[in-house]
Length: 400
Image 1 (tube, rainbow, N blue to C red):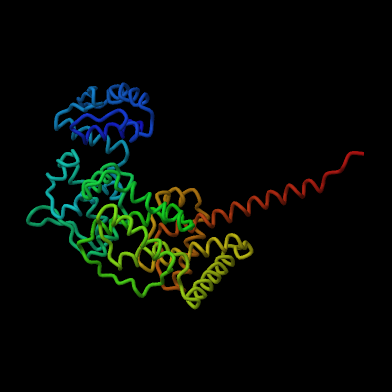
Image 2 (spheres, rainbow, N blue to C red; image 1 turned 120 degrees about the vertical axis):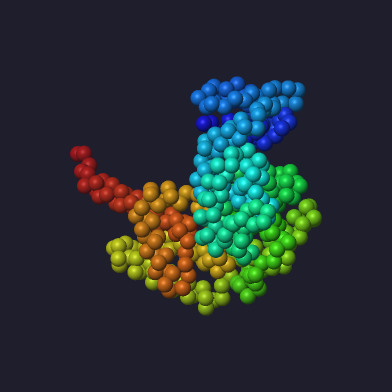
């Protein structure tokens, strides 16, 4: 099913009033003329589904006309179309709703998301399985379902699975803060401050900080057990975070604690270790690569660009591991399957590094290591091809 048609229908589904073609065009990132074409195509797209609904056009835009049962059925079709039945990552909207509401019944969830009760039961069971990985439990309470566990675990699972591109997650967050385009505005504040400070961070780091900021603000009434004051900190990053927090506080009348600022500063960190600690990490990287070289007959240490880039990545990664945070890697499975040799190198390297530094790297972090090893392999292949071409040219005889 066309993704834009899915976006249009999801928007109409969650609104009882008409939605303007201009607003739909913004959501689908197409022209208003294209919206008219999509609306005409929708009946043909859903011809094979046994669901009855109509899209009515009026002076205010487009409106979905359907009964409650048809709305639930349509919501399930759209959920299956974009794979939202698989895993907590794609059920993040339900998890977020459950966290913010505190205690809700299955009926409450079904009514809010227009799912049948049977579908909600399946989705909640998937959430239960994932929650156990974070030492959390989703169980029945006197008023419905509730998440049981410590605050740090709740924050960690929220950061890992907060889907800021999921329309329903965005709706829940904006409703909570009572601000339209809240996420976009916070993101722009982060970007503007980074530009002003003349620093460059990867998109993954920026999105990680954005998700953490949202979680900190969503959980502001709960106290975190962690104390980050003794962790490595770069003063420049602290100033960037402080400026970002001040703008958010002034614009939205929200509040960060000093501990929140310490935490966010560490996430931005590039190399805040003492000289002794940094030397220890560099030595560990060197010996891990040396062992990898001898096991696979490679020459990693001869490629200075590769070792420098890998070293920088490892330093940042270790800072995240220090505060028990991991980047999401949506391409993890593709990387593992497509770059299987580079992934094998990355796993070996991570295991050796873990032994020397007494740290544990997540599969997501190892997948990012893989990209460095894949770059090394591609450069090696390119040099080999150039070498072979040079040999052929040297063998040519000039015509007399």
